Image (cartoon, rainbow, N blue to C red; front, top):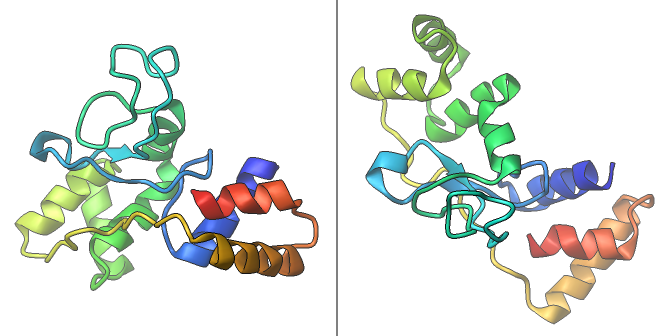
Length: 158
């Protein structure tokens, strides 16, 4: 439950898409990994085998939370709407159907048909300064009374 709350708080306050650990995600910076979601955290080689221990941000294997987000069918709509904010469901449904439900292929198809792609649909959130952080934590605690102070701090730092 705490991880879900962290993710919801971070997404609500910052407008970024987060993985199940509450870490903000963005696409890989290398061209061949431009459709892969990464959080950029250094989690160690045990957590991300066959890697340098980092989840992206340019290439390589994803952490489990980013992999789960990328593979989650319910996230397809969210991903496409962030990549192509000017398009509506009328565009996403046929593209998803034609690509067998694969959101990466749908994005490629929409782009091939002339849809303009947003350059950075998942901006990273900065770590807030201490004074702003304290005020923000107090605001989060006031709005969500069931969240403890440590959970609020963790959500704002991600």
